[in-house]
Image (tube, rainbow, N blue to C red; front, side):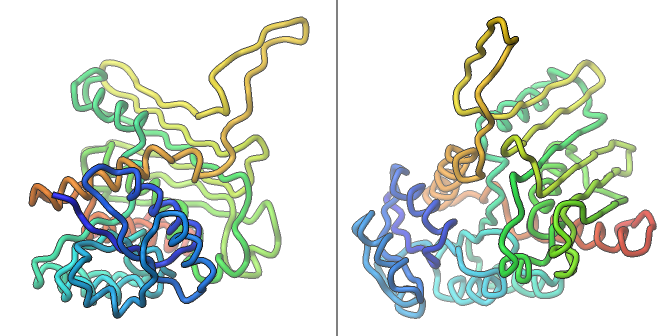
Length: 330
């Protein structure tokens, strides 16, 4: 079975997913939609797909699945539109910035018995998958503590920050999803601290650029998350999981895996500097998993429920910062 795709949105992440679809066996890119004609034409030229409107794609008999890469405030409406149209839906996180809207959207998907996968690509990174397998295989015993480091080289543009929902809903939300995945239990309490240390303009936009979060589960497992929008040395992505029998960690990716030793000391190449290069394999694995779920009629690895739970944690972190309290989830 070949799954026929259309991509909604030809911006940066839409181009990433276009490449992933084109490189995935059992997948083919049929159409692209974007109101910016030059962006749509660029994807069309690169992959030989049609340029269509979103409504035309919704009615297209030659499209089995869509990848939603449009602005966040359009996600829930598009998920519902394409679920009703009988298409499998892959949507970049988040489903929406409002929890009630996400819940309503998930209900529509369930009522239509549609396939929905939410894009949390870090679960599909080869190193992180190997780390998770080591945990599942019992190599470190019972998970006790998880430490997640995620630091961007720089902040996104102001226009993006205005629509993103803030650092917790845009950036830390990936860590919230990874935390749930690695802890193996739902989070019970959230405690967060946040500051603006890199650019006063971010504060003027009502956001933060430097945050720390502590998550705990009912059994007492803990996860600490640290994020910043300024890592001068590159895109910093690390995980360490401590268990009753040992620990497992995943380190950063560099431009090459060499080390030079000479009279000046030991040096290594710099870190990769952008999520698109760091997670190239993860995006490809993610689309391959979506295709497999469609072809086999099995549940997707990440769901609307995962999107909901990650957003719940983001909202709890915001509330913790605003109140100075530990937030207990219902």
